[in-house]
Image 1 (cartoon, rainbow, N blue to C red):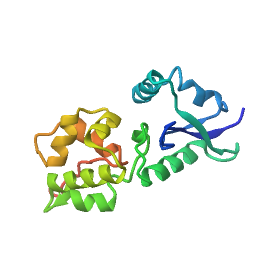
Image 2: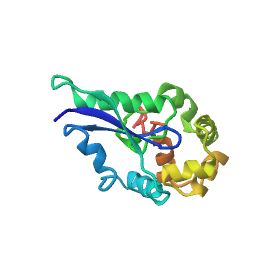
Image 3: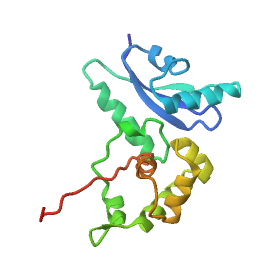
Image 4: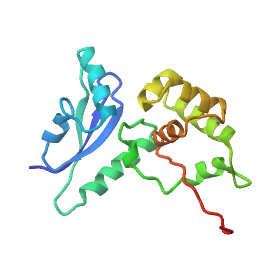
Length: 180
């Protein structure tokens, strides 16, 4: 069987929404149409099925036996995240804690700055061309979560915030003070 890295693409916009790997050739990508391990992918495939469509499968790269399959998958995940794609498997991509650019937005005098987080999320959402409603649906969070984050509301669901940030390949981490 051929080892490969593949993408599941929107049949209408051609946007990549999932990057995966397979050591079983095209068999694994095809399984997403009927039996997937991810609830987010299942919901997306089911919603497309309702309107008589399905994701397009595209082989991104055939991977030789002497190459690291996981590494090639991570490469493509990072590539599509950096292009602004919202991947349903973005939790597989682990950024180096928080990227320098986002880190500057998150800390101000050692404290979390929700206004800068809200601006970051709003700008990135608009860059990928999604309404708040569309973005909430793609994230799998309530619309109120996205609205609260973008309004800088400090009473936001932490899991929702983490999910939203993960859609852009970012996460929050807790750093220990030197004094502790």
